Length: 156
Image (tube, rainbow, N blue to C red; front, side, top):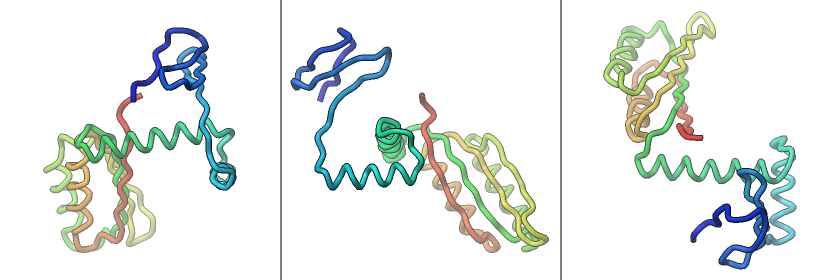
């Protein structure tokens, strides 16, 4: 499908869809079953969206990030992990792994949660598959309690 171009402030595209352009925003209409839009409205209220447009924009962005992730594009990622810092050699092994992936690691933050448990937050940028590999290697270490990976786009 070819997206409409900014040729006028209002009109129809080649699919005979009414399209209005407001600055860099494109307006378009969609048809949905009542049960689907009711469920969507309920969902976006719970998520504190101000309107459907913001929710739909986020859905589109999420799909584009997933596409970039699966196609091996450059992404930004955050690895959050909790671990027992008293586990012998664990911190040393974690640092060695991070140094092995130094081309990805932008920043780390270390937080003391309790006397035994710490939270490490690692900001990374690079190919999604490599960031996943870094997270997997950290997760496999004995003494690591939990690892989560969040991926986002590096583009506007």
